[in-house]
Length: 465
Image 1 (cartoon, one colour):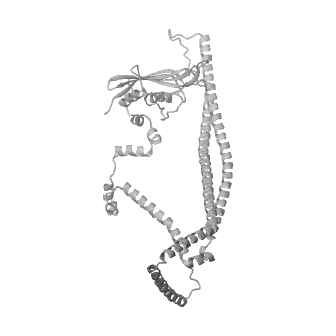
Image 2 (cartoon, rainbow, N blue to C red):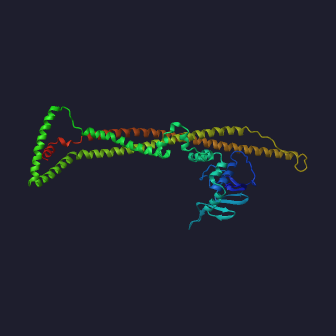
Image 3 (cartoon, one colour):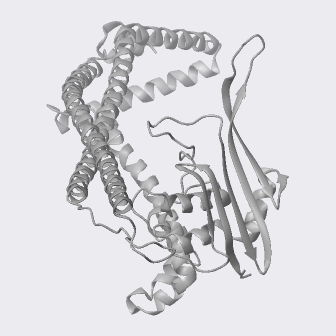
């Protein structure tokens, strides 16, 4: 529902650099002009802080206290903004007071600063924060207000998703069906989607791709296991193998007959007991032969895992330093550009010449003023001009020195960070070499696992089994 909102009056007290100021608009359109740093933006900051607890740049943590010429915060002041609005023909007064809280502890002679308080008033009545926000929301939505009043809010402060949503609300969206219908090459897409949206179909594809990647990661391991399980056939001849097969089949027939006789006789219990004993002995032999190497393999894997963790931490620190250096380079450029602008501004101010604007006529009778008064007025105007010029030059000089100093500090910081990155790069290379060495040692340990099939005792037990 549209509302007719007009600003009647905006009053500031001890807000940022303004001690007392009242802007009287009376519901009319007004323009505000002035030199840089004289308080134009402060008026807008005060209005947005009154409504939304933020300045005109959408920041909550900005400094709104009054500061002295020396740059120190003036304490024990109440920082207040009051706005009178006309909403659909009815006036509403909003007022907000921000103050320091000083507490005198028991037994102490002085008070200590313990925080801040913010008081809210609607039409002179004290209210809670939530009630104040609700009344403001009834008047105007925060995002709509900033879209209408701040030319940078849409491009610089909204996320791209919010900008896209607003543009689609204004211009309208295009459905997936309309896109498909506009291009014959997409005619098969509905059958592929099978009733799903494109976003959901992308999720299905991503899930399938993840499953396939997992399977692909397992394939080399399976191939390696298959190769390991293949018997060595070098030096074998088919004729000899065939003869051995025939002989083994004969032995199998004999053993089957013997097994039949055993099952039908009373020796089956004894044989089953012997089988369990031999199987236990085989396991014991295998564990004894491989135990030491398996322990070393486990320890080496743990070492590799630790080294990779240390490498990841070094890489993270390296990346953090690089990000900081890139950010410093950007800030240095900004400070250097600011310093250049301030130098130009300093020369512009320094070249300003005094222009006399003295009225030599009496404002009452219109006659010429006495020469002494004219001379005094000229000297006073010239002194005021020189004082203002000197103050502005000093202010520009201070800002320029601060920008140059900050740029130099960041350059020095980046120089130290580059040295630190070089040290981290050396550590990364050393850590990578340690990982390669440990992985080589692990491969050697895995290839040297004792082959129990070649152990004489193991073979004898197996034959007996």
